[in-house]
Image (cartoon, rainbow, N blue to C red):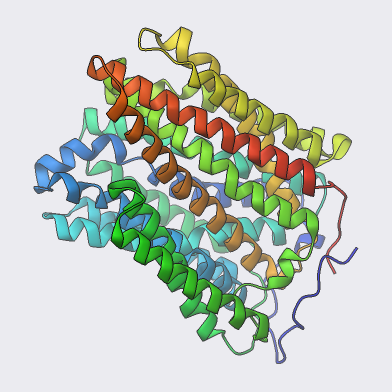
Amino acid sequence: MSTSSSPAPPSGPTAAPTGPTAREAGPPARLGAVLAVIVTAYLMVGVDSTVVNVALPDIQRDLGFSRTGLSWVLNAYTLAFGGLLLLGGRIGDLLGRRRTLATGVLLFAGSSLLGGLATDSAWLLAARALQGVGAALTAPSTLALITTNFPEGPRRHHALGVYSSMAGIGASLGLVVGGMLTSWASWRWALLINVPIGVAVAAALPRFVTETPRHAGRFDTAGALTGTAGTTALVAAFIRVSEAGWSDTRALLAFSAAAALLAGFTLIESRAGQPVLPLGLFADRDRAGAYAGILLLPAGMFGAFYFLTLITQQVLHYSPLRAGLAFLPMTLTMFATVRQVPRLLPRTGAKPLLLTGMGLLAGAAAWLWRLAPGDGYAAGLLGPLLLLGVGVGLSFMPLNATVLAGVRPREAGAASGLLQTLQWLGGTLGLSVLVTVYGTATRQAHGSPSAVLTQGAARAFGVGALIALTALVVTAATIRGRTRKAD
């Protein structure tokens, strides 16, 4: 079945692939090595999204950050990563995804080295921004390379299952690793650890991973500039909202700029011969519904991670290491669930798994909505964490598989870049909304600091439950779960 009306292939020669294509996949042992290299690259990016969180107090003390300036240790990475994902995906389509991945991994490792050696705040922020650029080149290429190295069917489903688990596992593993390195060595090792891993991945890529053809043609410069500027403005607006609220003038100006730039981007892409974002990707109903789910689910889930981290450290008074270990039940449950999804998907289709997973995520958030100041870890947090693990495990792999099913090989990078852009924007949007809800609730709450924090977080979890329910309704209305083949 044709997925959509997409632009014609670019004219001119293309580079020949340097190895077997997905449809000529090698033996399982080779595919296992391919998956290990790709997943390690993606896990490195996922871990880095949270690895410095528990190290922020030490970073502030060593480098003299102000309280407001400290947030930019996270925001500098977020802004560059979220703003450049679309462009990173299209660069891989045009220049070769293995080459783009190797470049991104080496840039990520090099900027991690710079950050680990930083002697002042400006140096560290510049290194974090460069890390975001490297991550934006890395993340879309990892998912696109799964599409081109694994044939559609059980092998791709297994690869996507392992890959999809890495986002949640990476975030929670980052908290554990960050706590261990900060407690036992120094916050600098939370960055320096990326260097040997990145070098090893870059060295393994040519040996195990097939390069993709490079498509000749004119690069969509106007689309790249407006799309990058628009998504960067949108991420910046959400970051500003999380700091200053929805009525902030700078946030409103950033939203206005983002709306204008993204409207111009859509117009440019509708006319471009080789667009950064082929709008035909949205023509397929299942894929459009999966994209909506990928935007909505992180909006509720990532906020939950943020508030659960606060509760474990400021209400339960856990150390950074123990706070990270508190997420292990969720991580292990998620990984166990993801291992079963490739077996279930061919039997049930994507939709039943998605509805079950999203229902469990909504149930976990609703359970946390009832959190009380006196609840301990076993009574208040363990059950919701287990539900989150199963819900994430059932949801993200079928969403990824639905997006990538039937995508033309030359558009795999664009499809992957859009997927991860929406996932990143969804998490940033959701955190902004939930932080605003939390701030409003804490201003109206009474009692001890722990009680105020718990009441505010519980209100935020309630809104997170509504977001998860919205994702469930959208999925039920749009996704049919039929099998599609590429053109």
